[in-house]
Image 1 (spheres, rainbow, N blue to C red):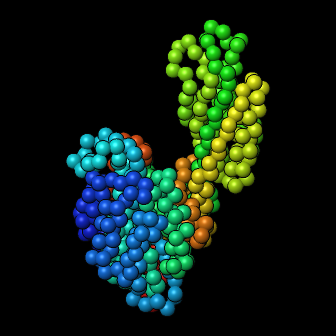
Image 2 (image 1 turned 45 degrees about the vertical axis):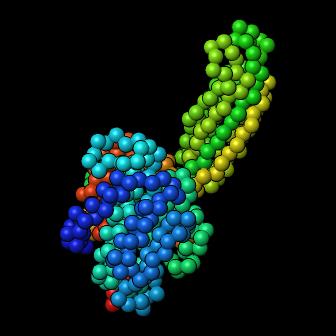
Image 3 (image 1 turned 45 degrees about the horizontal axis):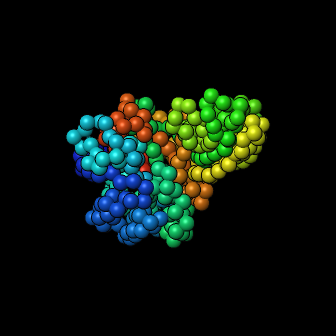
Length: 387
C-alpha cells in the first residue's frame, strides 16, 4: 500500500484548501471560519453525520463503511488552530491576519485529514465507522481535553484514536513513531520574590529581591541535576524575569519569575512540583525574602499505546517504505487527553528542510500531503478491512 494514486490526483485541490487555511489563521477556540470551512467540506464529501460545537468550536464528521459487521469505530484527529506569531515567510499565501500564523502546520494537518475524509467517503472500502475529529485550541488551550469532556468518545463510540504531526528536518513523507511516553507533560509556574526595596547605594538596608531571584533561578536547576534520576527526562526553564523597579538606582521590592517544567512520567512530574516549591520558598527564606509560588498543571505526558503504535508503524512502512523510531519530544501535545481515554497512537510525518515549528519562517510542505492522507486512509482500511 504505497501512496495512493487518488491523493496524487487530489494534491492540487488539497493544497488549495491548505493554503486558504494558511492565509486565514485563527487562534485557540476562535476557529470559527476554519470550523465552518471544515464542516462545509465534510458536507460536500457526503459524510453521514456532521456535528459542530464540540469542545466549543470542534467539528466531527462520521463516515460509515460499506459494511459494519466488525462494529469497529476509529477516530482520526487533526488540530486546526494557529499561533500568535507574526509571519515572516513572504509567501504569496502568507497570513492575512497580523499577529497570527500557522507556524506549526495545523493547516496541513487539517487539509490532510480533509483529503483522507474525501477519499474515505468516496470509496467506503472498509468495514466499520470512521470519526474524523477536527480540534481547536491545541496550542495551549486544551481543545482535546474539552472535546473529551464534551463526551465525544462515548457519543460517537470511538474505540481507537490516531493522530499525526508534521516534523521539520525529516525527509518529506517519511514517518517516525515510538511506543510509550512520547511528548512531555507541560507545566508552568510563577514565583514572586518579595524582598525589601531601597536605594541601590544602601543595599544593607534592603532585602535585594533581584539577588534572591538570581539564586532561585540557579537553585531550580538542581532539580534536574541532583533530584531527578539521570536516566529520566526533565527540563526546568525560567523564561521570564521581571523586576518591580525600572530605575538604575533602586533595589526592587519584588521580582516576578515565570517558567515551564517538562517531564515524561507522573512520578517525575510530582517530584518536580514538590521540589520547585520547596527550593523557591526556602531559598527566599534564607535571604530574608518571601516567595509566592503558583504551579499550573498543563498537558499530561502523551503516551502511545503499544499495540496501536506497532500497527501505525506497519501502515507507515507500507506508505513510505520505512518508519523509524522517533525521538522523545519535550514539547507538549494535547492529543494526550484523547490517548488517556482511548488506545491509539500518534505519528510524525516528515516536513523536509524548513524552519522549525513555532518559527516565523516555518511553512508546511505540501508535498507531504499524499503520504499523510495515505497513512490515515491506510489506518482505516487495514484496521477495518472490507469483507
